[in-house]
Image (tube, rainbow, N blue to C red; front, side, top):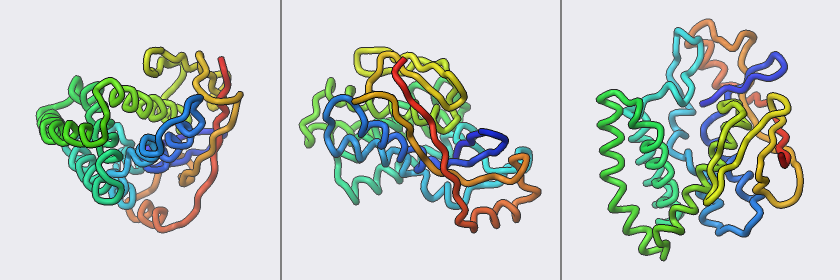
Length: 243
């Protein structure tokens, strides 16, 4: 879960909803991409789905924790479950790309700041997934260079979607295969990229979130659970343009 503040309102955005935006972004890419890659980008946070349906209540913050406040001891098993679900439903290539994305996050962001329990969960995930990823890559005919290219594309739209959803602030540097992209902002949700990686010119990307109560807090857990039972959603938009 992540939070986007705009115009005096605050929205909560689930991990799967953020991943959906990642998939929309990759479908606008300037080169043709395989359907498996596009679908994996849309599904990369599949493992968070059950957590997002009933997250814990953080009494200090008065709302559910953001994804950055959940340790690997909790979410590494969720990543594993997401990979298993992808394997069962869509086969090894989609499972491979989701598994690789989890490993990429853990290597880059998880291990440097992890405590003992989280570090142990990360090492267990990486050790268990490595031989499976190698097997799935061979079956899909993906060599190391192509697998790294596809993994980098998912990581790029994942990071850009975080900016769209308010969980990453510009300026920032994003990585594409062989090139660094500069992310800048003319306004909170008016973003530019240099070089421009998408087909065509500027566009708006849209998503949906749950509106939080005034002040962004719940008085207690019961109020939060009642909020989760409501179907209310609000749309949000971010403009993306060439730098």
